[in-house]
Amino acid sequence: MPPSLTSLSDDARIALDNLADRASGLINPTVRLGVTGLSRSGKTVFISSLVHNLLHGGRVPLFEPVQSGRVSAVRLEQQPDDAVPRFQYEDHIRSLVKDRVWPDSTRAISELRITLEYQSASAWNRLLSPGRLSIDIVDYPGEWLLDLPLLGKDYRAFSEETIALAGTGIRGELSRDWLALTHATDVNASADEMRARDLATSFADYLKACKADERSLSTLPPGRFLLPGDLDGSPALTFAPLTPPPEAKPQKGSLWAMMERRYEAYKSVVVKPFFREHFARLDRQIVLVDALQAINRGPEAVQDLERALTDVLACFRPGTNSWLSSLLGRRIDRVLVAATKADHLHHESHDRLDALTRRLVDRAVHRIGMAGAGIDVMALASVRATREATVKRDGHELPVIVGTPMEGETIGAECFDGLKKTAIFPGDLPEDPQSLFERIESGDRDVALPDVSVVRFRPPHLEETDGGIKLSVPHIRLDRAMQFLFGDRLA
Image (cartoon, rainbow, N blue to C red; front, top):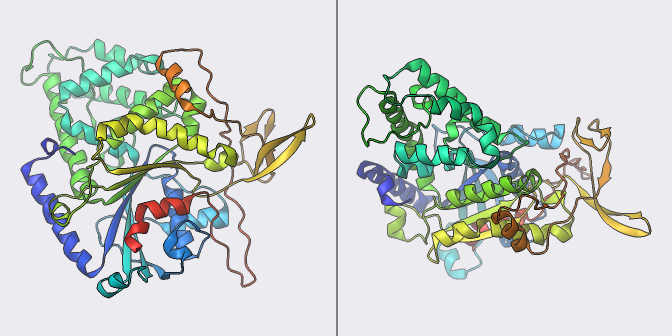
């Protein structure tokens, strides 16, 4: 985050927090891992599966410290931040393993500490290191991350950009009522609480309509309008963009001045504390995206996901940590962008999902530049809910995926009860996504996106061993994600 987006007092507090973290790390080496993603991308499932596989000796052949036998013990410990809610791992894993339902999505920040005891691969490091690493997993909604760019925008710029975007494509239909109310508003009129509330409610309804499953748009700041929590009804959440007046400084007591003050309060009360107390202290980051959902919703959803990822990745402090930088202000030196729900595709399409996701983040990577954070992209399934099979049709073998659709899911004319298994052809992704994006960016409204499965499957049934212990949660490439995110810290 550029220094101009924080004050000197913010920078001082960040430096003190990082100094405390560094002092604690001398005794107990720690990596702070941020886990975020846009709506329904699977943050809770990712954390639950990662922790479950570490605790229960899951199959993680690409996570070298475990595969080589150097990890001797793994345990959950008390988190260091008593004021932050604990990530309720036990409840979430019970939902996945026992009830076979997906846990509730992330609605606020939470934290969990898992500690690994290991033997270093280096004889020299074995002399210097205690052979223990704590991973503090910080779970937070992706909508909060999309708020960080607001720190660099005044109310006029925010209003101009938001109103311009609201008039494009499908957003024009979804924003009709709010824009009509906005355009009918005299920004120089006296501040009116009821008018402010009507505008804020209409604006929030527009954002919620954009986020709905049938649209699946992603660029939706301010994030707390979608997840208000205990700020619901507060002045800091009772504002909306207005059509900017021609004069630079509207008069005191006007509706514009009232909205501008509340916008600045939102940044001070909501965005800055999150940046200062949590985001600025992260070492590593994973950003989860549901690219398949966007593809199924059409070109605008794909373009909006690309826009959101550009905004998200531009927030990170790129570069490599040194002793001094970690004291004054951490840099996130590794960022993983992971396309979830790879189990909805045949394995032959996993590399294509990789390529498509990489194309989505290309623009953001260029903005970060060659000195940016180490960025990797992969397709994964934190919990594998399907298995692969083949069926014969018209003399040809077709690759299919087999799973148990959630109760109420429909395929064609059949509505499933949550018990019956079925096999479906998952669809194919293009080998080269570049031509697809070129057609989308050209404004070709007839561009045909790949038809891929978005059926929601129940979590898998886990068999028990002879000792009655349930096996670890199955996954796709979760071990590769662990190796990139913190495998080097266990070398």
